[in-house]
Length: 111
Length: 114
Image 1 (cartoon, rainbow over the protein chains, first blue to last red):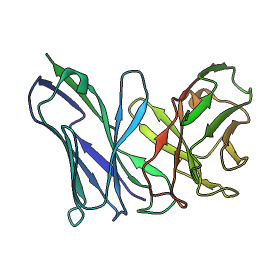
Image 2 (image 1 turned 135 degrees about the vertical axis):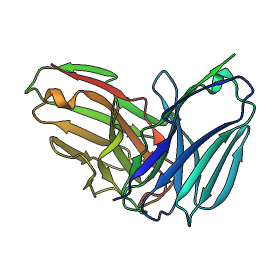
Image 3 (image 1 turned 120 degrees about the vertical axis):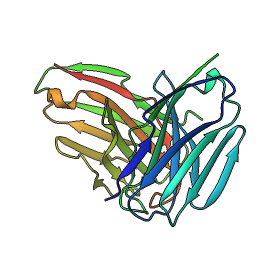
Image 4 (image 1 turned 45 degrees about the vertical axis):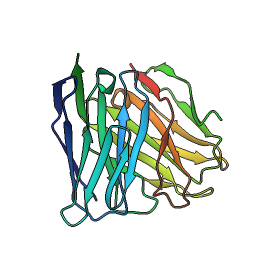
């Protein structure tokens, strides 16, 4: 069974700062997921990646398959980026078995 | 498209009562999932359905049953609710048969068991 660890658990930064959230997992996977949960509770998929790097606006996700490690970066952070960011991996590495999740990083961006 | 919908949004039960949480998706997705989210524990997989007609246990299946009624609908039943089942329940779906694609989440159901 895959184990997912995320750090930091809490992060407070000033508007404009470069943000990095780290994720590691224990079992080789088909793809890693990054999710965002806003204060209202809704969960949105940000990225699903199996190699290299993906970029969407100011968000960048990278993965190193050999080291079983992924990072989520936010450039030019803004208060609207304040949310919980969650890393997730397939429970048994791949296929149809659903996801297992990190405990999330609670990010607050202050104006 | 409504995406993934869940009913009810909020429910209060007494210990021992039963209820069914409903989930439906209109994206023609093949795989569907039920998760629960608890403070300090994160999201955990309860049950999943890789395709219509199949269901499998996840990490925390005890006390729950599921039914994949058709391709659109996947319900979660609590036969005899316990306070430990107080949680927020999320349904999710993914297009790829056998899972593995980006997951789309419903808005969640907040359940309080007294």
